[in-house]
Amino acid sequence: MSQAPARVTAVDTHDIRFPTSRELDGSDAMNPDPDYSAAYVVLRTDAADGHEGHGFVFTIGRGNDVQVAAIDALRDHVLGRDVEELCADPGSLLRDLIGDSQLRWLGPEKGVMHMAIGAVVNAVWDLAARRAGKPLWQLLADAEPEWLVGQIDFRYIADVLTPQQALDLLRRGRRGAAERRARLLQRGYPAYTTSPGWLGYDDDKLGRLAAQAVADGFRQIKLKVGADLDDDIRRCRVARAVVGPGIRLAVDANQRWNVDEAIHWTRALAEFGPYWIEEPTSPDDVLGHAAIRRAVAPVKVATGEHVHNRIMFKQLLQADALDIVQIDAARVAGVNENLAILLLAARFGVPVCPHAGGVGLCELVQHLSMFDYLAVSGTTEDRVIEYVDHLHEHFVTPVVIRGGHYTAPTTPGFSAALRPESLARYTFPGGTYWAADPDTQKGQAA
Ligand SMILES: [Mg+2]
Image 1 (spheres, rainbow, N blue to C red):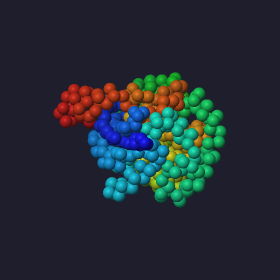
Image 2 (image 1 turned 45 degrees about the horizontal axis):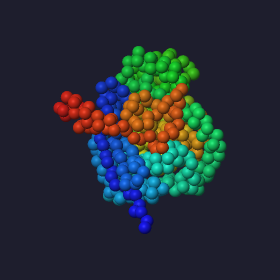
Image 3 (image 1 turned 60 degrees about the horizontal axis):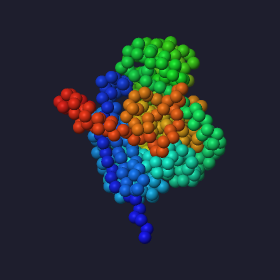
Image 4 (image 1 turned 90 degrees about the horizontal axis):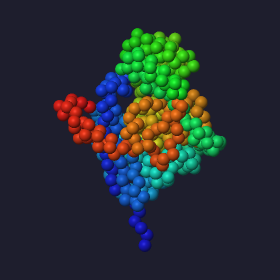
């Protein structure tokens, strides 16, 4: 008698909020008081191994409940799935989620619903990697190119990237992977840090943290800009004086400007040698980015953390609108769509420097960059993963930074699981932290 196959038995969701606005950690020109949050999902199964799949969307406070509701709306697509089949082909679930014609109306393939799909799909990848006994980067790097191509939705991008071209890139990409893997395990993957440069920090704190970053081995730091030009000139001067000429200094406007302002402002900061200007204007303005890029060169243009999907990335690349692709692990439809974006970037020869920080974005995206290094781009030159040094303590397997590099994770999975104590404390509004907070009780906080 054959045993019944294991099934997904529960899709649990949690509204998790951290009170980061109290310290101005994470403050920038458009988001002055974020409470870094996660709409968090756990897939449970009746498999004997007891493994769960964890995933989440990063948000910044109010609206996290909306994001949780969007994940809840996907539950019926996931419950009862055969675990073995699901983990052997996460793309099969993605196709069903994207193809839900009534929910598709809310996008298509963008915004709250699309991010919810990303969380669920990423939870499946976490489960698949745990069941395989491998960290996700390794599961992806070990996978056959044909199978990886089968995980990608080529609809709307096949005019610039066909399945055959993707297969060629992946076959070429894995040459020499064994040596790179040894290097990765030994040295890790280069990081840069945004921790010195939050807009709410005063010059002393900026200078102190910038010096510390260099002492810690980082070769690039990033400053938030875009609220006040005189302040930005002063802050860039402080940072450049502290780090010296050999360290890359990126600046990030978080979508603050119109196109002409972006050009004017970036040129005004040019004397400090900014390496890239990040999110100079609306993430939807493909041609605006192209105009900015032409006008501010040799300063590079970077964007991606708010780019909805692979189709927008395709257009940014087609229009020569960016120098740096900033994938985000929790903005698009999970690992599968990020595979498409990594391959689009490779097709155009544009380096990928992921967005991270937030809640757990460092934990997730390190896996994608390490896969990119081993099996797609084959290099870490001009490639860095963002690093922000807060909230890692809430994760079961937090990132490990050594000498300005991400250490390759060795624990099976996608590094996505939050600690049970953190869930109990920061669940909103009923967790022990928020229940004891007088502002929450008055309905004012988060
Ligand atoms: Mg940014």
